[in-house]
Image (cartoon, rainbow, N blue to C red; front, side, top):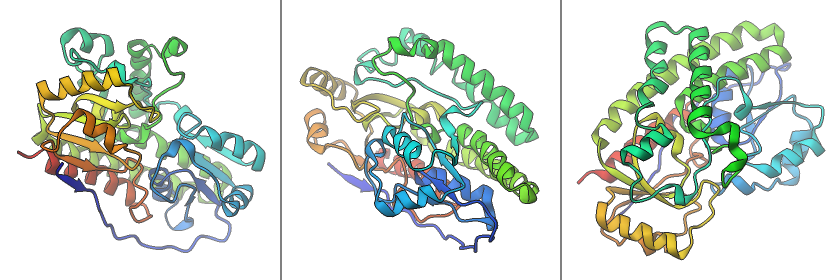
Length: 352
């Protein structure tokens, strides 16, 4: 297989934390980046996941456990992404303020998808009606255009709340326990709309802890949202080249990116929680790949390349992407580097 690895570099400015600024702990690099955008020169958020790998089974070091105990604010995606962290937080820092981003009002949430949720008829009209990704995509994400024209905070949240309700109806969030998985797909940061909602929540949490600097946090959040809207516009332009090009993912970690930018994904070798497909499903995927020939296969650090080789031959190009961007330099620019770099890497991989 032709393999294109994603290596990105960004320039990060260092800042000295204000003596009285809250000590912030984050779970993954994109969350750390969003927190850094809000804290600005007042603080330097730290993060727990410092090496590429699965975010689903993050193990803490003793030094990290001590850091958690001393924190003023914990910002994390939530237990659906890293279930073990919740127990650690409860034990090590029961009184520390905890911002669970996946539970923040306005957050767009999509159900877990099993590998079997993809099929040979994945993109026919019936499937699109059932899951709402095609017909409702423009309506779901038109708030980005409203953002660009008006930058009105209240309108953003009104739209996000409507979006959340639509997904609850379309994807059965009220009946999640009837699904093969409980809870939501936890890779929520890959939709820029969620990042815009989260910077507001981070600014609110920091303002409550540090009211003296509340004006700065709120202003930083507004600036961050403008940057996120600009980022989304740039990525949309990048991915226009992929219109109609089918993709295959090794790990179903990209559902939010797929929905936000209307990508066509044929199937996934493993589920959102990295559970591998069985022989029957792999055989079905192999048939699908032979029939529809994906333009690119997206790999990540947890990919079992043997499983990928079982469904696609070496003629299909691959791109190696870490959806958590762990290896990118820390700083407020990391989120844009992750999202924009992923988009460009997909375009480069899928070029004929």
